[in-house]
Length: 139
Image 1 (cartoon, rainbow, N blue to C red):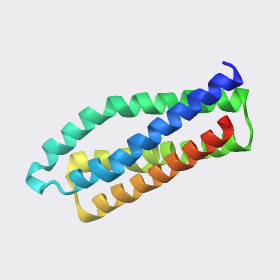
Image 2: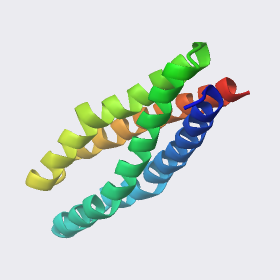
Image 3: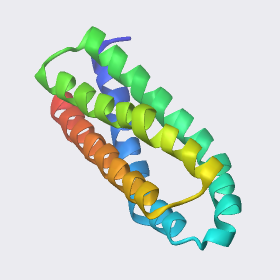
């Protein structure tokens, strides 16, 4: 993949990811967190089923764009974008995904929900860093 193409893939993927993260942070998780305990399992199971394909597609695009750009067009802005991607994906792998497992198995607690919302803000910050840095790299 050429440097120009890799940067365009990175640019598109990071902005798609930021849009996804802002939607999750501002709409999806607040609604999920406000779900009454008796409706929790069904709501969380539905959330997991519905969001998983989108997460897979967005994360695959992020990985492709990041790897291609680091290979073909590495520079400070690309490295910064990669750091934002790593922050988001690392927070997902180390915090959010295991937490969703605990939420599915044991249900919500104020601490679990607070941790989920904080982790999601970290992922959104990583997504914002990646999108801005990818934009700088593509200019």
